[in-house]
Image 1 (cartoon, rainbow, N blue to C red):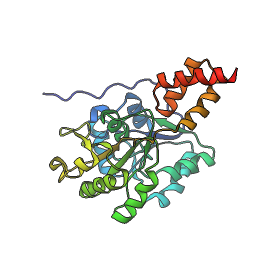
Image 2 (spheres, rainbow, N blue to C red; image 1 turned 180 degrees about the vertical axis):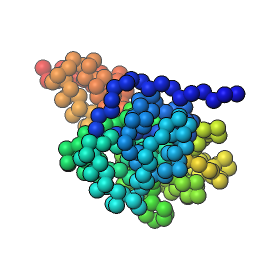
Image 3 (cartoon, rainbow, N blue to C red; image 1 turned 120 degrees about the vertical axis):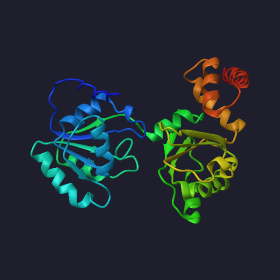
Length: 290
C-alpha cells in the first residue's frame, strides 16, 4: 500500500520573518495542523528539544528543515545565535518534543529576549496534553490552574500542595510514572477527598483515563506501574458555606443594582447558596430598607 502524500500547504503566502511557536502532536501524528505544516515547511531554522523526535515528525510529512537542538542545556549557548538569525530576517520555528512550546518546556527566555529586541513572535496553536486531559477528566473546566511538575521529594511536594489547597479551581499537574503513586498519596493527604483523574498516553494507542478520589487513585492497581506521559487533574475543593452575614452583605450590594430576583440569582452563583432562600431574604431586606 502506497504512502499518502503530505497535505498541501494551506496557502502560498510567504512566511514573514519572526519567531514561531509551533505546537506539535502529543502522540498521534495526524493531530498536526495545516498551519503548523506551512510554518515548518518554510522555516529557515527549526529549534527542537530533541532533533531526533522532531526529525521523525518532519519526515512523516515529507518536510526537510535545518534542525538545531534547543533544550535547557543548550538554551544559553543557542539564544544569541537565534536572536542573530531573527535580526538577519530569518524565519525561526520553536517546537517541543510534544505539545505546545513553553508549557513546562524551555523557551520563555528566548521569547522574552525576542520581544525585547522588537522581533515578531507568532503563536501557532495546536495540541496540548494539559488541555486534552482537562477536557476528558469530567471535572470543572471553567477555572483551572496549571501547576506543572510537583517537587520530587515528599516534604517539598506537600509544602507545594499546601500553597495550592485554597485555590478555587481545578488543578492540573504533569507527573512522571515512577512518582505517580507517591504524588497522589500526598495530594490526598494535603488536598483532601477531592475528585481527580489521571490521564496517560493521550491520543496514542493505549490512551487511558482513570477517575476517582485522590485516595482511590493512589492505590489503584491500573496506575501501579504507568508508562508514558501523565497528566493529573484534581477537582476544586468544597468551599465553606458563606455565613448569613456574608449573604446579607452580598444581597445588600446586589440590591443597589438589581431587583430581588436578579440579586438572589447573582448571590446564589457567587456563594453557592439556594436561590429560593436568598430571594426570600432579599425581599425582607428591601422591605426593611423602605
